[in-house]
Image (cartoon, rainbow, N blue to C red; front, top):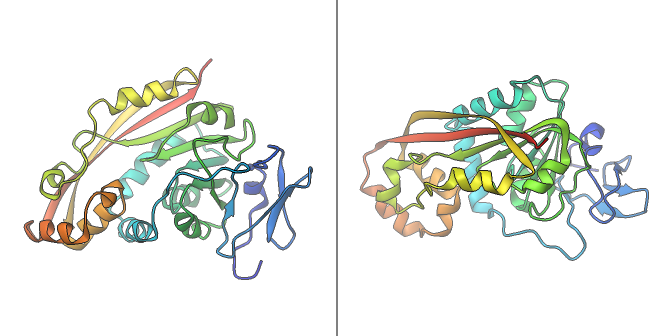
Length: 286
């Protein structure tokens, strides 16, 4: 397919037809996928695939502006500690060979993990076509897919070693289905102190103190906890970095650009912000 990066056949081999759930294979020219039953999906010219069940539309994903802010903030390295914590948890029991980044956005975190796993492949699945366009070029051993995380995932049964979920929804039954018997789910969620210094001044959404309990409830009885850790670090951000941090997340849907600019003007030129995340590891229930 002209202009788009080639599809890694090992990553494609993790995918399933969204209609009949059979394995799929890529066209020789990378223009699309097809299954043995004759169902076909064309690949977007930007390089990503859309694998939705018939008649299903994905939930509203990140806008082009939110994705641009995400790229700017992550590329600056501000959340490198999050990536490091994710890598440590995902590789603790041994190096995985197949990873699914669920709600993975631009594929930033998955790409960094694949950089350190030369034999591994991955799939980035997200509801946003704008994020998928970026993810399609995030790493040569990753495939980007637009899909609905609340529907049946377009991934084969017992296909992946790790499912990664960073600040994204998780579908317990489907995660358990796609994990290999010894596979694990690694979930990164914001802790109660996350961004505490700017929540009030900027009018951001607050982290629900019962979030951890709700997470466990959504995953059980399909998955059971293995271990958990907390990670805290102070970031020093200028106004531009704070603006991209706010703009890349759900806060962006609740704040106007003019209101955010006015609030930022009242903050010091350099703002100390707490990055607080919890990392939980789960396995399939036995």
